[in-house]
Image (cartoon, rainbow, N blue to C red; front, side):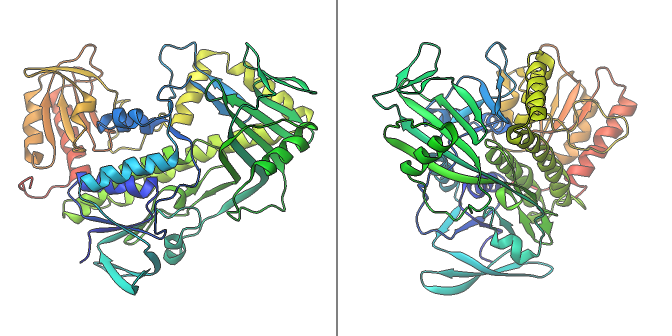
Length: 513
């Protein structure tokens, strides 16, 4: 067999999956159709729950060092409005400005360091599977050949060949509005006002943020003192997303059409045009073929796709590894669809809501936006929206009838005090292994977990204000089980055993190698 897992697509999703699989001791092979890494301007950064996950893998500082702005102001667009967290001491949503080409280079470096194989100029044109393997027909520089693996994961984007070959439906809608986006330097004839607005000769002051007209939406903001992010939205049903590069002249024509006036733009640093779609694959798994990222879902708002796609891979990798190592309990791999399809539906929910807020042009739509603005003045509502957009409000379904509120959620990063010194949840998760964390010196729980110590790291620590007596944490940093404070052993112990069996099986003890 050529690899344990064939990953189709070397975008951020495919590369992140390769790194996670290598941490789990799996041999991935990434096949990428393009002969060279892409430098086409696409996403300008990453945000949401994936930043916390990168922190848990010990990678966040590395990514921040490569960022054009590692700590942007916590103000985020939402359907033509803004979620403004600047007055909160602990914003529920964060972002990192990191152009996608740079993000892909960082992930390529990381995957290569861990020993993942990456082949470029290799296009998958056929797939077949049996009970044990998947065979990919690959067209490359030297002709067509076959590559075999235990599983194939399609990370090959919106027009996924893997999804089509697997016969997986991709229902949804395509929106008629065309979005044009540019990062440009400020033209010398323009003036930036003290409040951040823009003075345009012959037009006057334009407020930072969104300006609506009966012909569309114009928006701008500042990336630096002299670099602007400019965008337009127009209804143009006849325009297709054909991949033709956008020009500065096209962006200026669109601004002129929306505003009815010319706005001079400086040097273009990034130009892109895109059409939103709202789609979700009917299933994320067809036998030994799985989907992740844009191959599995498309969202009608910016800023959601990378967060969702990268989180897909973290959920999937440890489950694939367990299956490949013969350690997966029945149904484990199916929970990838169950959990991430649910998460994708939540992301579709909030991005479709953004589309409704953004697109409406009548008085009813304006009233809806006004009401929404009022709601965002209330801190609980603002925090709830931030968690929804970040993907931090996800609670996966877990076994057991009397579950603690923590189960299924992303584990908080607690400061831990041990006999060896101070550490944290984040440091425990660097190796991407399951952890039983005893926070109340419960030897009976540690004793149960020792039956799984070849699979699960057992740690004992103290923390201020512990949320539970003990936590069973999955490799994707979600809580699989929690012992309530002072929960009796006769209920905590069998519940822990049930959770360990459910997620990590009942197989014989093995060497960790």
